Amino acid sequence: MTAVTRFAPSPTGYLHLGHAFSAWNAWIRARTFGARTVGGRFLLRLEDIDPQRCRPDYAAAIEEDLAWLGIDWDGPVRVQSRHLDEYQAALDTLQQQGLLYPCFCTRADIQREVATAASAPHGPDGAPLYAGTCRRLSPAQRAERIAAGERFALRLDMQAALRPGLSFHEEHEGRIPCHPERFGDVVLGRKDVPASYHLCVTHDDALQGVALVTRGADLKPATDLHRLLQVLMGWPEPAYAHHHLLTDASGRRLAKRDGAATLRALRTAGVAAADIIERFSRDPGRSAAASHLSIA
Ligand code: GLU
Image 1 (cartoon, rainbow, N blue to C red):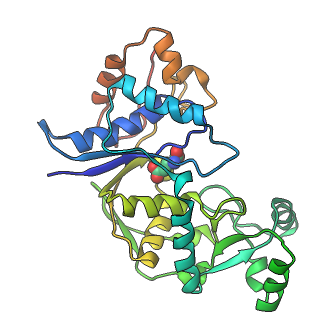
Image 2: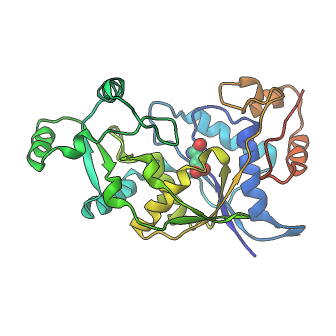
Image 3: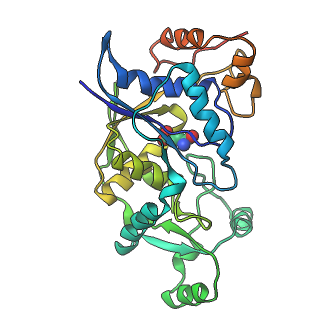
């Protein structure tokens, strides 16, 4: 029994215990099966397509912090920002299927629309659903605006893309029905880069042969959309395991803004890596309800 798993952080800050738990969850599943050591592969991928938020020093720190924890990875690290041409090619494929349209709306346009709408439905990520303004533009209007140099994103035409009866395989829970329509016409190609989190994560999981995607429960709703993209692109279906999120003693989910919980801060405070790993390995079930973590 071998698995190919991955840890795919975005270098937008230092890793905290929640990230470490996520990395360890993926790593332990590649390296062991029950009490046995197995030869699965554990991959490290830097999801750094956002030029505003990602920093090379955070990327270097991720590798350092994982190494400190004793989490090793196989093969070279995949750095998404170096592969924008591959994501562009995936966008071209979707475009050829007539599933994308250019969206010229600015953030301010969208906010104005939400503010004036009688009711604005929200997607699973909390963002208001796009009202479809640019979907209704004629081909001539689109061509004119592109020729005038207006910047645009590429959105998925969700109604055109929907496939009935979609589901994904969640380890331990079996098959779960998908509802990608809850995301509406999501952006797949951003204005600044021909890529987006949803497109890149599914592209790379397929390219890298990831058979088991382990990640935090906060990303579980996104799986519905990822499954749709896999079907549209003809990519294989991995299994999913969403682990619970670590919380602090007051029950709040660990977040990058809580500097005290970064691995660097813990290391400086004299916490041993072995104690952190030991704490993870005693975690009840890894998929059970939130457990508290106190490293005082
Ligand atoms: N890059 C994403 C993040 O840091 C995780 C992607 C994933 O595991 O699917 O939140």
